[in-house]
Amino acid sequence: MAPQLRYVLLSPSPMAQARPHLLRRAVAWPATTCTLPTPKGLHRTINPLRSVACSSDVTNPPRRKGSMADVPKDLMDCITDLEKLFTVDKQRINELCDEFVKEFEKGLTEEGSSIPQLPTWVLGFPNGEEKGTYLALDMGGTNLRVCEITLMGHGKFDILQSKYRMDPSVKTSTAEELFGYIADCLKQFVHDHHEGVVKEELHLGFTFSYPCDQHAIDHGILQRWTKGFDVKGVEGVDVVPLFEAALKEKGVPIKLTALINDTTGALIASNYAHPDTKMGVIFGTGCNAAYMEVAENIPKVAKHNLPPDTPMAINCEWGAAFSDRPDVLPRTKYDVIIDKESPRPGQQAFEKMIAGLYLGEVFRLALLDLHQQGHIFLGQSVAKLQTSYTIDTEILSLIELDPFENLRETIDVLETKLGIQCNEQEAKLVRRLAELIGTRSARLSACGVAAIAKKAGLTKCKVGADGSVFNLYPHFKARGAEALRDIFGDAGDDIDIVHAEDGSGVGAALIAALTLERVKAAGLSRECMLRKGVSHAAVS
Image 1 (cartoon, one colour):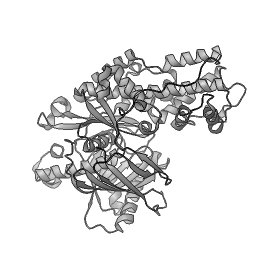
Image 2: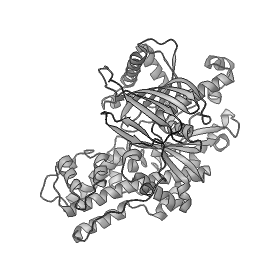
Image 3: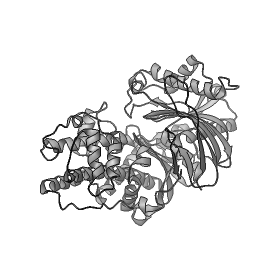
């Protein structure tokens, strides 16, 4: 059963650098819906862990009203060409799924796979009886979120949280500036909610959603930045000492207990609510997945001498899939341009086809190409189309949500957002392009889910999903469900994708709790382990 979440909007923080929205929520079992305020105080009702297979409107893609009979042949030919470019049919998606499985196996065995399959040292799922108060820090691609989470056992928890907007300049600054900013936010949080007085050191789970090599639960060497970050002095470096140095400099009484990825957090938080959850996925600014393997299937951790049946959460980092073999992916000429002009050419090939950061750019490039070929928007300025990343995924969402047969809202969106006037026939092409891009994203995303299910031998399970694209993009869930059926037949409905509203926050706290409990059970502090020469990773 889903938890009931009760939010109360508190007054904003006086912090000058950022103005977070402070939310408090208590969770009680069982219930199915909750009411919460949006950042502007408007209330909406959600089911926080609902299945995408609960009704036909989320399992079957939409059937559009209206006719293409009035669309001239020139534009119909363009639509046909776009459909050939962007459609990932049943045969193609099954072939790609098999390639994913091979790459997953390679990543578990050796270094150098395009899907690195990173061990997280999260050794098992929660049992629902965890207790204690923990901080969680979630550094995603857009926001910084600080939570204080009280685990009360019996599946109950209470959350106090502050959200800070990540200024774009921070994302391209230096290590000192980035971690100094994070430490400032944590210091402000402690000041606001503990009146600056903390009796004992606070334990924190840090959701750091970027590819890291981990040989212990509280350490991680950043492989590379993703999601538009390019902070100097961090790649190839253990991020934990950088973070701890900033905390010490700012005088923040916090101890990092666990460094995790948001997908691992989504996996653990969703399992906390639904014990049959076996995967966590993020479909947002970026994309990724995590699932639980057993040690005997992870040859590259053999040196740690874990018992063969030890569960280990694996951070797939599948956004980089096939970056070394991009022809495996059904890329278009627009995907090639995006990769070539990105800050990191040749990296994150899969992510650049499906993630929210890039969907609007694919759309922009296709529209600009059609204009330059003389098919659409003739005789008018398309200045905004000529600037990279002027279209975000929200515009595609608005177009797909247009309920009118004459596409009145699509025409309005193009005029207000892009300064382009178009007729109804052009709008039909524009809407079809948005559908094709959104559908491709959903189908490729589901392909990755299916590949994990095949690799792990999962025939029936839940998948905890989070991220702005999953949560907000129209028909994403239904299109993904259809792709699962294309791969597994009717059994695809047994791969049940559920919504994890607060995976990275609650998940980070749970992992911090599990880590402390494991260390306590081992009877060794970190200092004792170092003195005795015991691998911290093996018990954390």
